[in-house]
Each structure stands twice: as C-alpha cells, then as structure tokens.
Image (cartoon, rainbow, N blue to C red; front, side, top):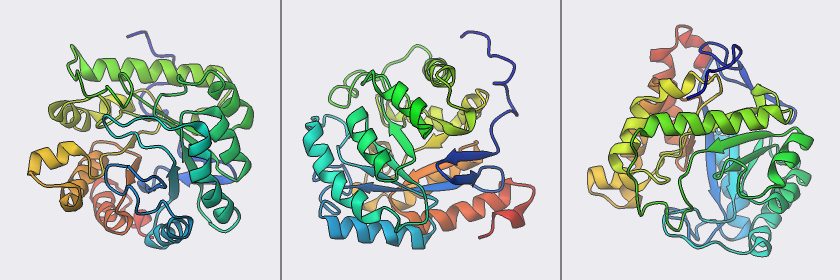
Length: 298
C-alpha cells in the first residue's frame, strides 16, 4: 500500500461529519443511521416500506427512536439481486423524498450508485450520497458530489451484487479493503471534498465470507488509520444468520452484538434496521469505551 500523506494518519480524523447544514459529532458518541428501503425485494424489509405512507411514517419513527440520519434506498443490493432501471429507482424514492423534505430534522442520505438518482435526491434535500460502488459505477458521480459539496459514503465491494458472493477468497482481505478505500477517498478528496464529508465503509456482506466479515469487524482499527470516519452496516445480514442458524427476522440480538463489536473496535457510524434497540445498546458501549461517558448520553 502506498505511503499515507501526513494529514491522513491516525488521530487526524475529523471531529464531526459535515452534511448540508448539519455537523454531526463523532468524538462524543457513535452515530446511528436508520435504514429505509423503499423496495419490494430487499433482504430483510423488502416490501414493508414500499408504499409511500409506510415509508414516511417509518422515517419519522426512526427519528423519534434516536436515528442521527436516515438512509433511503430504492434498489436492493442483496446478494444475487438484479438491478432495476433508473426510472423505477426514481419512482420509488421520489414520493418519499418529497414528503420528507423540510419535515424531518436529521440529515437524509440517498443510497444509490446513479448520478441521476443522487442529483434528484440532493434537489429534494438529501445531503449524503451512500454509494456501494464508491463512485465508480457512474462517471458523473464524482463531479456531482464534489460540485454539490455533499457528504459521501464510499464502500468496498468486489464485483456487483448479482455476483459478489460467487468468490469471496482474498489473499489479504483487510489490506485490499484498506488500499481500495484509501484510493477512492483520495480521489474524492482530490476532487475538492473536505475530509469531514468523506466516510469509508468496509462493505460487510458485500463479497465477503462469514470469516471475512468477522475479520473486518475485528480489525476495524486498521481502517481507522486512514483518517476518515468508518461506517459499518452489519444489521441482520446473512453472516449473522449463518453463525446463529436463524432467519432474517430472528437476527436482532446478533445484529446488536455485531454493532457493539464494531463500535468497540472503532466504528463511527452504524447503519441499522432496528434503530431503537441499537441506540440503547450503543449508548452503553459508548459509555464503556469513551472517557467522557456523560457526553454520550442524549
């Protein structure tokens, strides 16, 4: 891996996440991102919030439960999923964004790899672009996010959702993930986006084996050395089901365990389906791991 520049070393990570008019603190507590999939086929909540009224109600409910931001997605990225058209993705997210604009008091993130979808979402108030391809799928994504000055989440994934679980072998998993995320973060930084707007995500469940997911969670501190906030999305994923022998609807306890481990090992943001339970669990973990335990209490 190439030599890190002097401002991207351990201890130099931003103290807050800048997104739109928001400055979300990163030193005092872990941020919780609530997942809102407005899709019929997502692996856990597919179809549950595909109707606009249900999706809007769930967004407001997650805010009441303590979510620091809401991540809205209109296309499933579960293993072996098939892509939908941009028109369909827009049709799914558009009514929800329209109903939430100006009516929700936390940042909204758009989970997409398409610049057209991201542009529409930004015009409707979204201030974070969460791209599972780390802005590589659509060549217009990088200039878009740089020009708009939104925050970005850059994730590692080998292959595409339809094939990513076919081969999950790596010679050096953590080294490859770290090198890739450094390269993508450097590209975004080079385009003019400040480090306080760049988040990296190791891509738990995206082209990794059960053992690989566990290794990444165990060695998160090595990704922290890059100097960017780290987001972890392990909620209700298949590796938890395989470890415990349970289906998606019975993975709450396993998801809380994974979130707690991620925070103990350095995660700054956890992306979850079960906001209320995770917020309560993470408050306890924050109190244990942070010197100023009182500052993590809400």
